[in-house]
Amino acid sequence: MPPLATLPSTFPRLSGVVYTTLLNHRPQLAALGDAVHAAPYKAPPQHPVLGVKPRNTLAADGDALVVPAGFDAVGIGASLGLVVGRTACRVSADEALSFLAGYVLVNEVSLPRESHYRPAVRFMARDGYCPVGATVVPTSDVTAPDDLGVRVWIDGVLVRHTTTGDRVRPVAALLADVTAFMTLQPGDVLTLGAAADAPLARVGQTVEIEIDGLGRLHHPVVAEGSVA
Amino acid sequence: MNPISSDFSRRTARVAFDGAIHTATPHPQSLQLADGRVLAEDAVVWLPPFEVGTIIALGLNYADHVKELAKELTVTSKDEPLVFLKGPGALIGHRGQTRRPQDVRFMHYECELAVVIGAPARNVRAADAMAHVAGYTVCNDYAVRDYLENWYRPNLRVKNRDGGTVLGPWFVPADEVPDPHALTLRTLVNGRVTQQGTTANMVNDIPALIEYLSSFMTLQPGDVILTGTPDGVVNVNVGDEVITEIDGIGRLVNTLVGDDLFGI
Image (cartoon, rainbow over all chains, first blue to last red; front, side, top):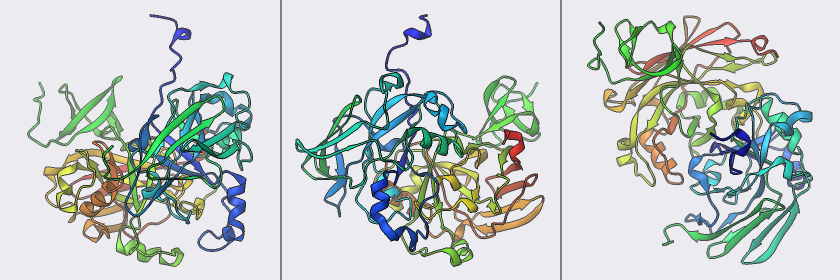
């Protein structure tokens, strides 16, 4: 049996649990303006706003994004996935990064919607709505996780170029504030959250996303019921 | 010699005992491991009774509970089902301990019928839905109302806390439950009944929920639907013993403990 250090580079194995962070990009909250104080919200979010991408949403590079009847496009949320390397419960921001095994590219796909009041599971947890990159890049290879270039192409045209910066909670603070109330296990993924104004990809188009150093994911967008 | 008694029921539990995890079945003296050993209820550690996949929960799915919360709601039960998801870290078994944060004023239990999926379901119509149900168990899905925020509500800080979703004790096969919409639910806090209702009062019944959910997500064996709670939720405190029970399904015990045990 080989020593642990020679385990293949695909380690760690993902657990299949993906938590997404919503409304973490400062411009997205800013764009809501005074609405954050009005009904139904009544106050800006005080703690991390999270969603769950269950196992039916997991998809790989090349898989189709399926648009249901009543919609003609999906929102593309290129996002930094934080892959947990050891059990993280109530970790401090100072030590948070040491609990990660690495980073992975995640596409937080969702149907367009106006409201942030309810969990919107029908919009976010559809089959195949969480493509995850094939490679977990070790933390040691990503020196500035809060300043990585993020790009989205639709039909080969660069439509969005942002970074992983300007977040309400950067990577370390997010891990601290989330593990304050829920323990993350090795192989779990917590995303940093996509940038504001997620590009919409229409049926028939092809989407490609990239984060510096984490590779790319590409997907055709198809209508539900169409033959793949 | 203890006879292996499979005639009593096909109910199963998962328990830890003597250094291993076992499947157990009911026995007149409490439970019996598959290897024949008969044990008392308090001799084992009870785990959630099956390998849990996706945890899907319903809010506001009992007409009386909607009325109870009406003052703070801006929606009615006529809207789309209020669905939220949870992660596996929330789960804890029968006779476990759940932490109640010291700084909160209102933490309450929720006695719920948990529906376990047994066959993949995608675009299943209500009329065909029950064929996708493997069975049932009892859930106590705690909520910390102080932590509610109106962003993707109920937010995970309220509903996805470590050990805040109690499941068990038994997995009950569907064919042992003739009518899952005619079951009495009840919660006892320190022996006093504080919540009582019937699964007949679900706003969206089990077939409707499976039709709705499977219209956008593939349900898979082991996925569980927590179908909501009737009215009668009250604050519980450290030291309280909370028993959520559903007639014919099970009696699920949990005890609330304080921050001190966790070094907080």
